[in-house]
Length: 446
Image 1: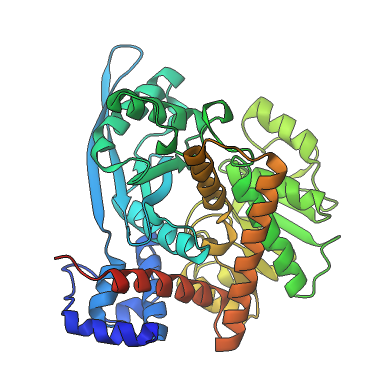
Image 2: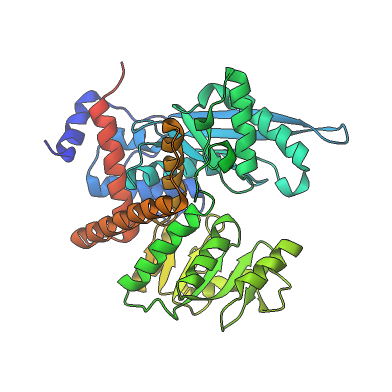
C-alpha cells in the first residue's frame, strides 16, 4: 500500500479541519505570496499538499502546532527594578520523535514567528531523517541591553515556566539568535536542579565540558558550506574563484564566510545589523574578525569599502548566502537580486513571491530546511553521544555531518529532477510525506 493510498484511506478517519487553520490545498490564500514567516510556511506546506494530494483534514493536522505555551518572564534587574518579558515555546509535531528546536532572544519575537520556525524545523528534521519533531522557543528581550547576570535570571525563569513540556524525551532546546552555549548551560542546570540529578540530554549546543559535542558550534555553517559548494558545482560554476556575498555575520554567517574562503570562494561582502562592507578582491577574515571582536560590528573595517546593508543582496556574485533573519528576499527586491545560486543560511529568508521571480530567472535556490540543517544534525549527534556517554572526536563529527548533508542534497536534487520541481518544493514534499506517513501509521488517539 503506497503512502498516497494510506492518505486517501485516512479520510475515513474523519480528520476534521481545526478552527483557524488553512485547510484547502487549492485555496487562494495558500497560493498567494504572503508577507509573514507563518504565512510563508503555510504557503509552502499548501504547495506540498497539492503535489501529494492529501485530504484537507490531514493538511490541517500538518499545519497546526501540536502544543503551544506562552509564559510571563519577570526579571529583577541589577539595579533592583523589575521588568517583564513574554516567552514562547511551540511544539509543532511529535510524530517522529521528541520535539527539537532553538531558543532565540530578540525584541521582535512573536508567537506567529515561533510557529513558523517550529514548522520549518519539523520539515528539516524529516528531510535529514533525524528522529525529531519540530519546536522553537523565544523570549522578547534584546540581550545586548542586559548584563550576563540578568540574562541568566531570565533564562532560568523561562526554563522554570516551560519545565512541564521540555525534557530529553519531550523537547530539547538548542541555541539560536541571541543565545549561546552558556544559555544552554543555564537551562541544563535549572532543569537538573528541578528533577534532582544531572540531565545532559535536556539541551544541545552546550559547552563541551558539560557534555556538548565537538563541531556543534560551527555545524550549521559547515552544513551551509557543504551545500553551497555542491550547488555551485551543480550549476557548472568553478568553486575556486567563485564570488560570494554573505548577509549576516553572526553564528552562521561568520563561519560560513570563513569556510567558503578556505574552499577557494572569494567572499567579497558581508553584513550585520549595522551595515555591510565590500572588497572586490575578497575580504580578509582574520583582520575582519579582529575588527568585529574589538568593535562589535563589521562597519568601519579599514580593509573594505562601506556598503548599504540591503545592497549586499543585489551584488553581482555567483553565490548569495542570506544568513540573518526571515523575509529579506521578497517581491520588492527579488528582481534586483542577480546571484546565480542562493543558499539559505537563515530560516525563511525568501518569500514565495521572490521564489517565483528566481525560478523565472533561472536562479537556483537551495531551501533552508536543507541548507542550514547542519546544526540539527550535530545536535542529534550530541544527543546520541550523551545518551551513550561516549563522545566522537571533531573529525568523526565532521565526516558524519558531511555524509548526511550531501546524501540529503543528492536525494533532493534527484527528486526535483524526476518530478520537475524546484529544490524547495522537492525538499518540502519529501519532508511532508515522511511526517504524514508517521501521522497516518500511528493513527489517531483515542
